Image (tube, rainbow, N blue to C red; front, side, top):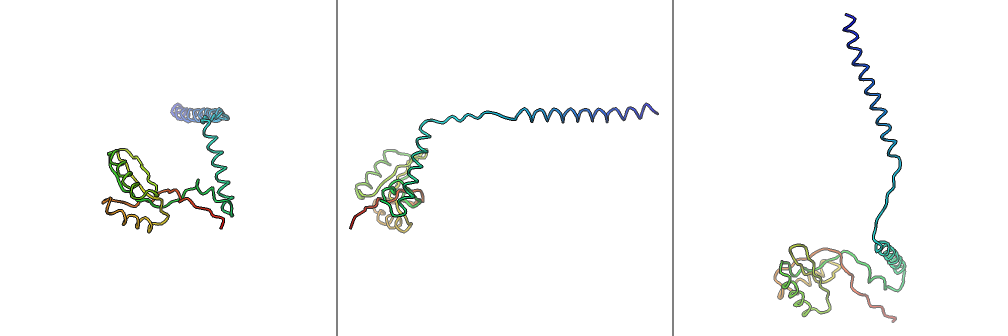
Length: 162
């Protein structure tokens, strides 16, 4: 009978020793990960772009309080453009852009490529109503058009000293 009792005590002590071993092993693993070195590899152009962005942000902040207004050429905002062409033919996209530029030379056009399609977008409209007006004017030249909401380049402002 005594032999049976001792057999049951041995596995409990074995479990205790295993638990103690796991506890010690996990603590040494956590201490082994104390410090490390992180090396950031960035192209030199990255720092230049960050510096340029900071100067442009400073100009925009200074011009909003009544500055020269020249910094607005660098800023952008969300607005609308009229998409006049979408298709996989590059030549047709450039032809649509040339056709639009012939009718409206003062308005900017943009060609965007999202594989496999070329998209020609026109205008930098701040409101959807302006984009709708342009879409109505273009119905004769381009039968299928969409109004796209995206970041636009604001129109150039003319500063006069009057």
